[in-house]
Amino acid sequence: MALAMAASTGPALAEPRSSPVEQCAYCHGEDGIARDTEVPHLAGQNEKYLFNQMMAFRAGKRPHKEMRFMARHMTVQEVAAIAAYYAALPPR
Image (cartoon, rainbow, N blue to C red):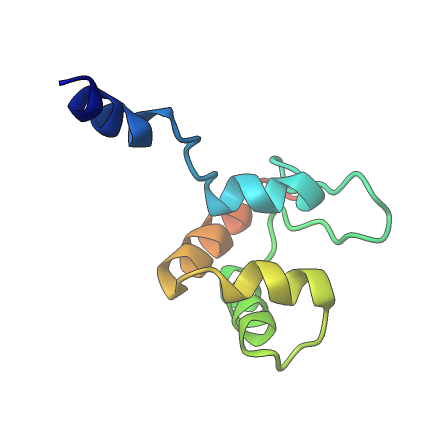
């Protein structure tokens, strides 16, 4: 019985995977305004533009080490959600 309980509580103790927006927010800001001058602001950008750029990073057609790493692990649906999220934010 103790083994069964230990096995059933294992996944519940694992940390949840952060959302793609949370991962992007680390550099680009939750509000789409980057804190580093070398990182672009994404708030209010065109949704199609953001989507296409992320897909280019994902495919390796647009070179950037960190963005390639982040984008290649995202699904097309996650890329679309990120583009929609940042496009919906007010530009500054």
